[in-house]
Length: 302
Image 1 (tube, helix red, strand yellow):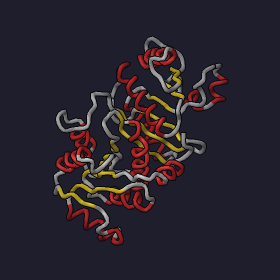
Image 2: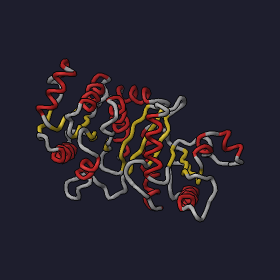
Image 3: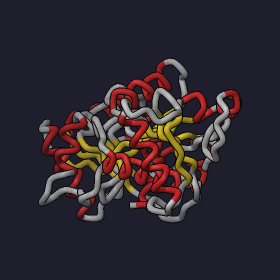
Image 4: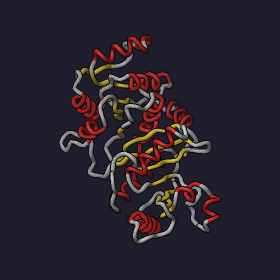
């Protein structure tokens, strides 16, 4: 696993073939700034889909030196139309991944999951978040797509996160299935699911990773906490991937990382034909650029 996002970007910059990010409804300053940052870093090219008038105005006023440097596909002010057109550029081989711009997530996913013209694979889709600690990058899922995953959906969430870990050069990530406690409690469904998934991994039904659970957050990431509680596990205290029980816990955890801990974060939706980036409209340009990097790395696992 890369220790930080800078290592990831350096590796992507060294690749001979540059990929293209299509930005759906690109008429927002942070999305255009992310395209500029990606261009400055020689990370990727960007195709801007949306309202040409607004896009050109933002570039002229904020990044005049880049005026004329980006291809723009004009879809007017219709955000849904921009999302659909962005998906079409993937089918046309004009772009490799999609970044959501001004459109909200529901509009973007509606276009992506359209049964006739979308990018669905029939698999469960889930959002995989990466956060950069002092020591390394850790993944968390799913805090953005699946509200209350059942056992089957949790297995898919694990597999999607493992694919991202592999893309980030971790061939055998340690996966912790989180709960409020580290013991199986029949009254807590998430602990039962965790125990089943861990056993499935032991019997090679889920491969490419090491899974244990249920684990509480402290003993999933802190070795001393695991020792104090007498937990013997190849995952406890050193998890590379944290799987949360539901969307509320994942969403709150992710925003706590961003707004309290001030960690650098990025995230990518997996389970589709290409990675989809649904960075919040409130996210900074840097976060959106890091999402681009994470999505570009993940293309080899789609």
